[in-house]
Every structure is written in C-alpha cells, then in structure tokens.
Image 1: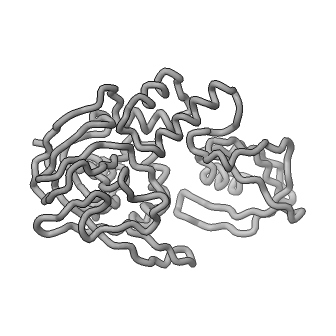
Image 2: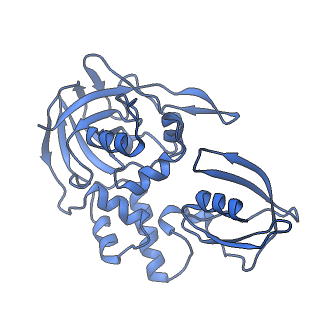
Image 3: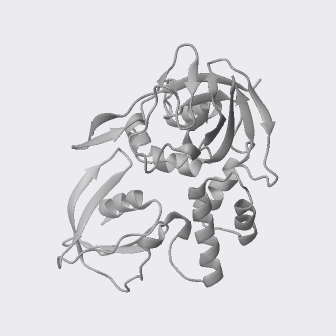
Length: 306
C-alpha cells in the first residue's frame, strides 16, 4: 500500500555555518496526530528563503523512504530520521521514475497535485552535514517532488495515498528532472514538457528558455538554469587569478576563493559553462584542467598534482 509514513514541519531559524548566519527551514520534525494543510503550507511549517522555496507550487515536499534506504547504503549512515531531507511528507511508494507531473493524490481529506521535482540547494548539505549532498541529489535521479494543494484538509502518519487523476501528457518526475539537468535537451521532449498544464511556472520558464536557445542557436551554458538577466558574452582568453582562500568542505571536496590580479571584476559564471584553468606553482610544471560540473573535485586534484 502507498502510504504517508510521517508528516514533518519546522519553522525557519538561524544557523551558524562556515562563519556566517543562514536563515533556513530545512530542519523538519515529525508531527504527532493530524496536521492541517493550507493552500501554501502545513500548519507549523515555514521556509527561510521564499524566493527558492514554498509558495503555491511548492506547498508540500514529498520524499520516499525507499530513497532513504538508498542514501543510507550509499553514504554508509544509520542516523537518518524522518524529515532528514527537509521533506514535509515521508512516503512509502511513489518513486520518481513512476510519478508524473500532474498526477493527483488524495491523502487524508486533502487533495494534491504534483508540480515539479525538488530543486536542491546548499541548505540540505548543512542539514545532512555533508556538502556533497546538493550535487549528489541532483545527479542521483532521486530528487523527490513538490505538491500543490488542490483541496485543503487534514493528514496524518499512516494515511493511505490514493491516486485520483493524472495529466494528459505523461512525463515522470525523473524524466523532467533529467531533461533540465542533463546535457541533452531533445526538442520534442521539451515540447512535451511544455504541454503539461500542471508543470510549475518556474520549470516551464526553464524549458521555454532551453527551447528558445535551440531555435535561435544563441547563448552559452544551460539556458534553462540561467535567468535572462544573467546572460552575457563570454570573454575569450585567460585571465590571471590568485587563490585567496582554500576551504576544506569535506575529505573529498575543496573550495577555492579566487580574485583577479588586476582588480577587475570577474564575469558571472553560467551554469553548465566549461572553464579551462591553468595552475602554476613555483618550480612545478604547469597543469591544465577543464572545470565543469564537478569543479571542486577537479580543483582539488589540480592543487594536489601541481
């Protein structure tokens, strides 16, 4: 039986992280008894960054217990609790490669519609005490998904999840997620995605940007991940940079803070851009690296091998 295992809520709070204060609602705790569901939120729940979280299209975040088990195995951890991934609903069943955008489900007395995959931000890395998690979640094909609330009501742990309807155009959460983040954006699949009425406006805009970039053959990087205001021409050639700080994120991830030696402001990096870096060290050979999605790992290797 597909069912709701736990309802998790939490209000935003300030967290000290890496020398600064982060306002976040990523910490969610299980609710005892029934919980009221409103149009925009669960009772007792909130988000710290309303630009990237919450709202009508992202009122409820659902994550599967099957994915919990996957991450327990991958990360060799046994300390997970419900709400660990910042989800409101911990559910049994409804895998991302089966649930489609526009699917409608009744849980308790409330009715929900799937609108989009989760877009992972760095805060889940804070919650998990593992800075790799945003990248791992994005690349794993296990993002989880958001509901919007079609009918308010009450829900509770143990409620059965009953499918009530679906969209005419069928694309799974996993397919939609891969369509945005993978390097291949087939035009016919973009057009299919845009025919799904329940798709959230944010994801719709991303796919429209990708489709437009194919039609006009302009732009660099992944147009679906970049607001129009961030577009700019790429400057050719190399610029000399200095490493100002080295931050050990974890045993496997190293972050470098750099600045231009001439004092000029650097251009904003676009998602999916490729950057070619040359690392010079005294009395050592020059090392060349192309920095792409896994830039922190490549930079670590560059420093160690230079």
